[in-house]
Length: 424
Image (cartoon, rainbow, N blue to C red; front, side):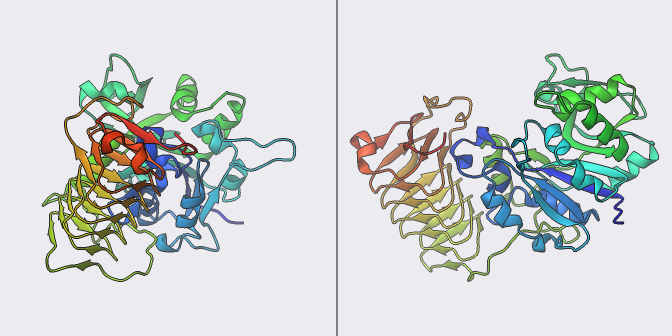
């Protein structure tokens, strides 16, 4: 019989709709980050660095890229006969096919997977945050307090606390109350969406709430256990943690990597971040090129100028082109004499010669002001931008566009071009 002290369940099925066209064809945890990684690499690396060798990855929305990236888990040393990484999509039962309808419902549908390892503890993780955390230390805290549930929490500015689930604790960190996005928060300790459950407590709660519509940990499981006076504690975390759930926070987290002394160190010897690496040639920077304060991925060819930018693998930047404050993902091709300022250009996009991207003054989005509000030009993957066009700020483009899509050769600030057939 296989017995594991603690297994991890990694929720990676989210659409990430606030990332706009970046997630129209890919799940948020599979979005590129830092020129080399994908967002899901961070919790997976945390698991193996924390000694957790059994991870179930729950996928749902646009899972193909995520599935092929994770594979059998080789980069994270999770290709194990006993445990390892297992991708868990919703599956068809004999009577019906059931999509995951909430974070807790997704875990409930995989009770048999968890049961097969007879765990003492289960840690629930989100697949869309950038951070390093030793889950073993959190487990030690859980055991020391004889807790039923331990919630990782971090202090946030009190004026931002209403955006989070907030925990109110006593001096011993035992949770006295829990508020989901309160209008007037009584504490600044925000739940990070990372939970350690003693297995029996988790199983019983999931079964008890199995008929709850869209069953969720923050909204249902935690309040259910709190009402029944289970022992719940908050594990305080004070390191770097970034929810890259908006275009603004995603852009900022990438830009922080190129600071002289980055707040988040990707290259720490004792806490490595692992990823699937393609075997490709080294980058080439021509004699006339200029690269300043930037990350340049493997296999890139740079003939132009790059300033304060994160450039993924296999990108080509043509002669005379100037890239500033931008994120270029894998296999982007930039023509000659192109100017880009504050752009997020997704994978396999082609930018025609002399295009100017990110020009003029900011204007509010006419397409989706909740998503596009950060003065960024966001271009979805596999898009094509024709030569000689001017694209304003706070704009969104998805699909193969032609000169006819740009009246007078322009896309005004705040406007968008979403080609038919592209998911919104």
